[in-house]
Amino acid sequence: MKYSYYSRIFIFLLLSFLILSCESDNAPIIYNKDSNEYVNEWMYDQMKKYYRWNTSMPAQGNLSLNPKEYFKNLLQKEDVYSYAIHPALPDTAPQSLRRSFGFDVSFVEFGGKYYGVIVYTLAGSPAKNSGLQRGQLITKIDGTVLNAGNYEQLYKNMVGAAKLNLETISFSSKSGFSNPKEIAVLQGFSFSQPIPYQIISDKNAKIGYVEIPHFDVGQAQQFLQIFQELKNKSITELVLDLRYNGGGDIASATALSIILAPNIKATDLFIKFEGNANGGNVDQSFEQALKSNEAKISFDALRGAHPSINRIYILCGNRTASASELIINNLKSYMNVIALGGKTFGKDVAGFPIEDDRIPGSKGWVLYPSIYKLFNSRHEGGYSKGIDPNIYTDELQELEVFPLGNRSEILLSAALRSISGNTGKMKAAELQLLRLSKVYTDSDPLLRFNP
Image: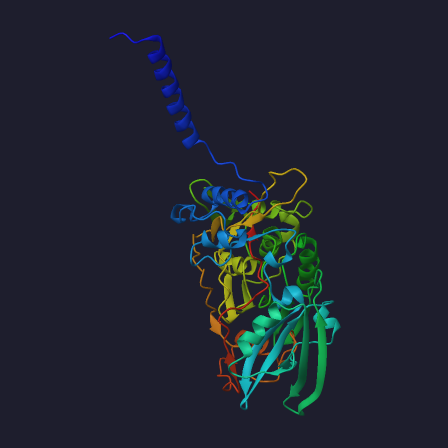
């Protein structure tokens, strides 16, 4: 069959149009750099690559959503640890009373009345500088009296506030209620914390007590000095207070573990990271985990500060998280770890930040996804619902709350009794602890792994 010149031109143009149409259909959509779609498409691609549960992520979905909401929709239901922030949007960062004001609070009912109990204050924090201290009782928050129906909402209000107006009162078993105060606390920063420690003599035992508020980067030198002194004083037992330690730097937590664990070598396996098919699995020895973020202090130097102990009592609770839980779980492979207190927070994941740096000179969103699950050298882990203590003891059993490190303080007292072999029952609790559906803990949102 022969075609005319015009027929051939028509067929050529038709084919060209069809080809261009197909190419147009398959071409990627280029979104405006100021749009939610531009951000969310990037988020989805990063999560598909790195997220521990990438194979069960939903479809890409509605890219026009607010990025904070869009990111949340990508997460597994049980994953409460992954998050995304924008450096220019402070409200996207995780919030807690400790982060904003420098204190933690629990709620109790006693004698038909309701109180917020200050359980922890950071040194140099807005809370501490305003006069708040452990053991004080909150009776009113912004003029509202605490009761059974409002304490949780008032707690949430405090977490999101920029200023707190509190009415407090003190209590002791000897003098009862006294010293009512009105205290205003402004939101502000709290910086690196001291590490209190002491030696407690109890019968034939010399017991070291160390309270660590957080695992900051570069703490190995501080741990070295503290435990060298405790070793020189010939302690025979150790109580490590991690009940308000929300985690921090893996290398610093490893440095402490190197000091504590008996009979270990630098090459002994300390931690196992298990990721998806893209991230793979990573095993780190004590020395490798130490060197991940600590270049000044050696494994051998830390080992030189090991006191003569084969077991350790770790005081814990629902604010014990991340690197603190790592110590409890991973030291179990090498020594007798006796956890005492309440169930821990349950953060058994790690990852690394992923920054949107596509626009030169501009800081974009930063993702902190759960990339790895954590295990010890015996492949024991799976504590996403928390680590159960060996000895359950609520630190709030009486309305009088003693300072941390005081021998009358509930958890330390229980540890001392256990060390001495006194297994007698404690007296019944005098108050009712009120549970919160969500604790806005200052646990590190992500245990940072340096790949």
